[in-house]
View 1 (cartoon, rainbow, N blue to C red):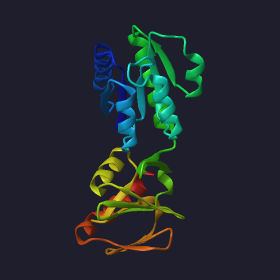
View 2: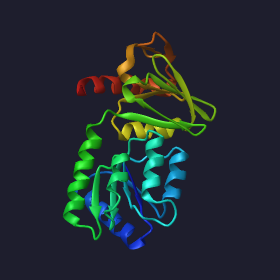
View 3: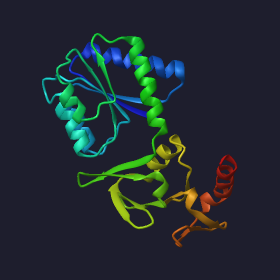
View 4: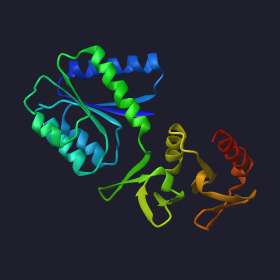
Length: 238
């Protein structure tokens, strides 16, 4: 699913952008989740709480925290969201260059350009190395999905294990599993507490999975029946 944010203090403009995106979603069968913000401060607060957007439509001149400062916040936290600026102003190009905008659309919006720029952004997002993004104590981190060995639920925390590190963040394994399935990451749930990256399976039995790090994880009884079929289906699709 493509996660998109629209940030503009002009309600007719946000409504117009949302309508165009919904039309693209319907005609091109692209799954999207769209959030609307009316100032940069609200968007930054949401990002600070751990929300991530693949694509952000951002106005430059807003009354509370303008688009330049908003983009600087996003880049300062190493968040790789694509930024498409939508503005009637064209006097900010030097500042815009510093925050790496993907495209710039002038107001009033040309619908054909909007569609073309969306398609360009969508292709770029699809071709990127996939990352898992999370935050802990207001520190943002992103890991290549290929480096994740498995995720472990422990109380309210999620532990994310790689070859050399273990990171912790607040979350729910059910939600991460659903998101991983949407992204076609080939993760498999083997236990109420474990979600594993199938590419790191070195051996498996009915009750145990050996991973590339050498560790073994127990397979929960209710997951035993589906584990092998899911794993072999992934192998067939490679």
